[in-house]
Amino acid sequence: MSRPTRRLVIAVRADPVICGHSGEARNLAEVALTRGFDDVRLLTWPIPTLQAAGLPLKPLDRLLPYSPGITVERPEAVGDYRVPDGRHLAGLTGRLVELLSEPVPTVCLSMYLVPHTQVINDAVTAARAAGFAPDVHTIAKAVGSDVTNVIRSCLREGRFGAATVLLTTFLASDEVVAVSEYTRDEIVASAEEVDAHCGTTFAAQCRERVTVSYPPIDSSAFVDPDPAAVDAALERRGLKRDRYVLFLSRVARAKGIYDLVIAYGQMRCRDDVKLVVAGTGPALEHVRAMAKEDDRIIFLTDVDDDEKPLLMAGCAAYALPTKPEPDFVETFGIALAEKGLAGGGPIITTTTGGVLEAVGDAAVIVEAGDIAGLADAVDRVVLDMSDDERRDLEIRAREHAMTFDRVAVFDQLFAEKPH
Image 1 (tube, rainbow, N blue to C red):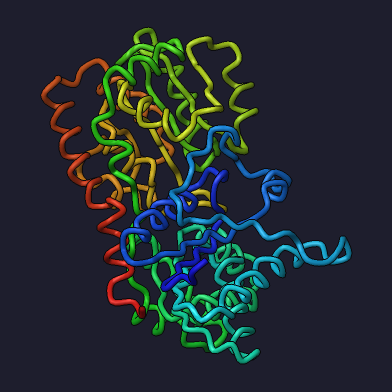
Image 2 (cartoon, rainbow, N blue to C red):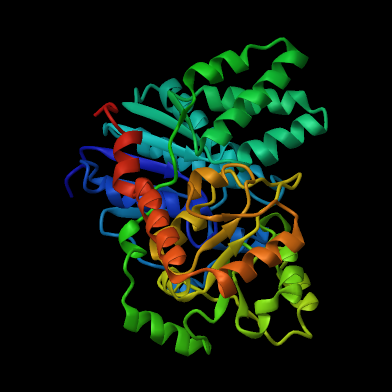
């Protein structure tokens, strides 16, 4: 077998994890094959480890395959039970050192500072110390909850040492990017707080170095879905076009699911449209219990990537009333942009975090946490909005979302990288 000439390694929580990062990794990997990379690897976690962590996962039997040339690696843990967490990091880091020992020009991209950027930094340091002299360029992408969850929690708890480590880890990469302007601002604000406490200079470095790279989306998977396929998917689910409001996201408090279920009970349109909650997540069972007396609320926990755009295209409205929580703030909202591509009813969302970057001016906006306002907004969209208004929102949403097409995002992120 001939040796590859250019390699891309992405350290990420890949499929089957339900999160934007896994989709970003897939899309960047697919485009890389058309841009001169002949060996693309997703370095990720063993599936039993993901299952044990309680992360929301897609159905394992319906995962979309990757193109030839993309290899998903799930290194097993190193050591035994006496090393409870570091075993998996050792497996990931060790495998990357093996790849870096080969004389192949390599770009390493990490999504999530803890632990993926740490894995890449440690592997590069080890490979150089061992004398392998890797030809490597590193990119660390802060995907949002790195800051809103990890760094912010360190600051709230006064754990400035941990926050210092995280920022040092981030800035040790050759290139540092954020998933949105909102995220970039949050990184700088966090760095300023650490600087004020510790006398460090992180904020100036972040202002100078951090750029923005929006999530890459495979627009071809969403734009203009086959009407017959939409109708067939809805029939399988017992749904009808324009007769349901769709929530398709991680089922968690920060996504506004509790507000939406309560608001649905107050809506005038509830006799006309069902509420479809599509997804899994930590709040699923509690929300099920809340809705057990309401047969107009339907839960779908097995929606795969093929069905997602079909459900989006057939809905009367798509509601994601995301709200800031201590452990999570919506730093972009990939599902919102995907919905914009798929068409269908208007998007109803909030101004939380980076949401407006995802939807532009093509959504109906409500105040986060305003349950009465949310009910009114859905009623207006379903009962009162004219066909022309709906069509105008649909066209503008698609035009805006096309700016996140994976080819354009890839070319910007990887422009003039070392070969």
